[in-house]
Length: 168
Image (cartoon, rainbow, N blue to C red; front, top):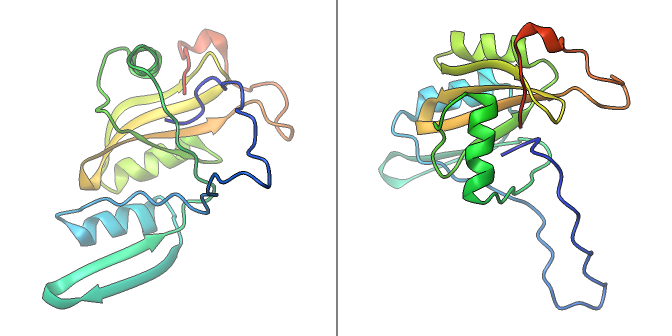
């Protein structure tokens, strides 16, 4: 879901356009083991807690700040391509959540230690990101990715001979 090859941007709506402006994307995930999911995403992944609410019947929700949000729409062929590059086989369900981090290798190790299952180790993609795949609490299949081509990093730092062959 993240760091896939960029598509051509759509033209922005004009100020007089009746198209509504979306201010925030919120992904709502039901977690049977609420405490484990909160500990994983807030404490291990490091998403700051923005708010928390409780209600009748032990109803609880925590809103975690995940930085800038994007919605990536991929057709089935692109989804298969991403799985092949990152994992080497089809593994992702229809929805995969991706988190951009500063250090994919360290983050992957921390998340595995916190209870995630590694599906694929950090892999360098053709579009110059370093991605790993994990099965996380709350039944989420996630990608942790680090952009290798950024103004502060210059050209990617990965080793093409290392066997890492990259993706989103």
